[in-house]
Image 1 (tube, each protein chain N blue to C red):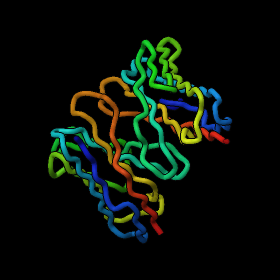
Image 2: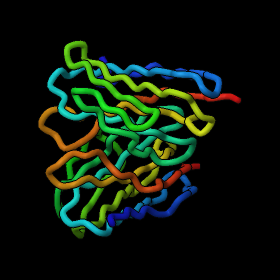
Image 3: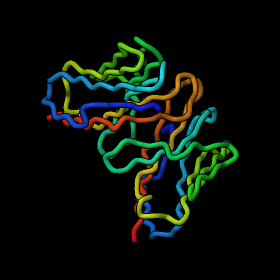
Image 4: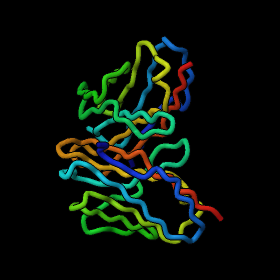
Length: 113
Length: 110
């Protein structure tokens, strides 16, 4: 069966520090991968999605970047965090060219201080 | 206009009650529709897909009205464990991504 792993679960980082969040999927190949952010009391905002290795689409201009170095690995990064980057970051995957909904990882709660 | 709109609630209902949520979407060419459930400080989890003919899963019934561009979720015989935020989700045409509503919060009390 397919599983998705996301870490760390919580993170407190100072303003201006770098960020790296990692997400891996097991039990499938060529998944679509997604990074979402949910700010406190708000809806899920799509940040990036990827349909293959090295293919990244950015949804909103921001202080973040994403990379997909391997088929089942998706990384969210920042060189310098802002206070506004605080939120609940969720990685998700779906079947490549089908749409049966997403499965989310357990999320990373990031607080920038 | 937001792509997906939901009443944020909260909906406060007693155990055993029937409750219904609606959701509207702006793009008439949207392709797929879902309801997700999100517990406090947890990731969203797929509750059910929504099909044009309507579908039922136990106490949950989902319906789609393409003409009016809305989706509904009906929960019968509410349980305490149904307390959560319910997210309406839509797939815009031509893209393999989901657009989430901000959610409707449900509180079921004893």
